[in-house]
Image 1 (tube, rainbow, N blue to C red):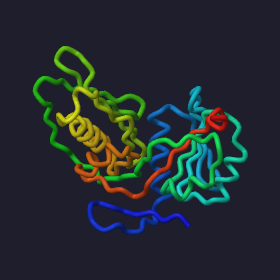
Image 2 (image 1 turned 135 degrees about the vertical axis):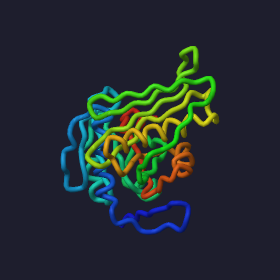
Image 3 (image 1 turned 180 degrees about the vertical axis):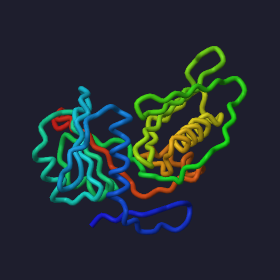
Image 4 (image 1 turned 90 degrees about the vertical axis):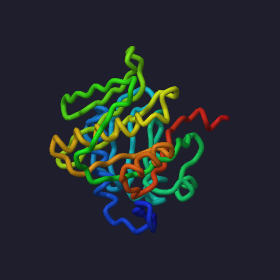
Length: 229
């Protein structure tokens, strides 16, 4: 059985809410990306994404070997993704050739509240909300892209997505500025819990802002040409 945990900088503790948290993340992710509504499955959810290299994804909050092997056996469409909330060493033996391993993710949450933000000298910040999705854009004074992020509002939760900084503008506090602005925006709209799946690089930033890790996520994409390499 796959185990999950909570880690806020102290000792790891079992997390029994993983399915609920993953469902909250899924609900916000589809708003953020404009994807189809999640389809309920015995093992989790299927989402039609509709992009050439990301046709659909299967999300399993508590993956079992039987379920993963059954999905893999039934998959023939390139661009099908698996999002498995477990360590990669536990689930990789369950998939065969043609599945490309992507960088790991980490399911994280935080309690939202008003945040103090200060735009560093030399930058400007713009934010706007449309259709339940708020975006933040940071640019240089002459209009060059520096950082961005977005957050999808779903009930009393909000899902952070696509936070990034241009390479030449990193380590200047812009990631924290984007996150605090997104968190305040969601709080002002009535959300009280933030969710995200962060990259290994983003995990340190989010942890410094009070986010708690609940589970690793293994991400795989089906590219059958890989089987011939």
